[in-house]
Amino acid sequence: MSETPSPFKIKYEVYPENGVFVARCLDLDVVTDGETDAEAVANLRDAIELYLERQAEAVIGKLGEES
Image (tube, one colour):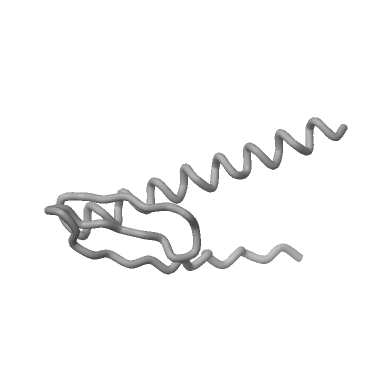
């Protein structure tokens, strides 16, 4: 029986700083910014995706080395 995975919910905050909006993930060490709060959140989404892809590649690479 195959179940559909539920989406992973990530907490974040957005705040103005030095003329831009900063978006900071509270679950991962990822921070980005944008000219608007919506842009900062969109950039954060992209940055989190890239971060998770790189983490997965690192894990897969280590598994390959153990073989």
